[in-house]
Image (tube, rainbow, N blue to C red; front, side, top):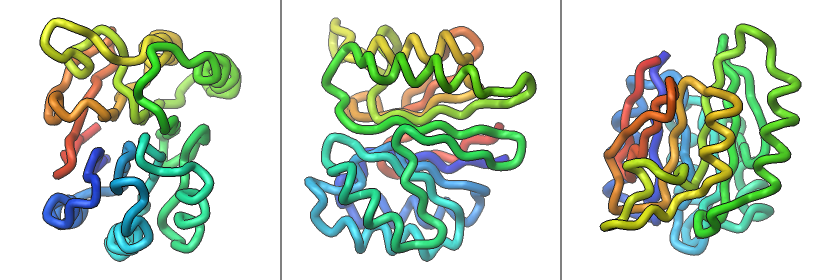
Length: 196
């Protein structure tokens, strides 16, 4: 399967144009938040993604209101709002968790991880996408400091997804790393095709 992941577009039409071009080769598209700048033109951006005719899974970043984004996604048949939700696609289970990006701990995410694990079947292959990067990796390091989220890191260690797509830290766009066997990627605003 080919996943097109992207994040932190912030309303850039040139970045979105590159995402849409890459979407032709993708089976599924994941937006890990901050599609807009404080929701400006959000419906137009979602409409352009919808026209790819691919399934688009979307979570809010720190620039989108959860309710408004959920309402706008519901207008399109192939755009799914995924914050705190899971979705089965083939042999994969996608789980999205958006918003924020500024806190180092998120007790809600830790509780959700434990509940999510109880519902997983033995052969389920999990793809996680969050707006915040996990703490202590190449994806959350700015100069000499780590600014990511420890709860995202705990989720990865508990669930052991095949892949984590995240963003928020613009300086690490395009970088990848690993936590155990989990590949973690910040695909950046122009997107990245990931084959799994």
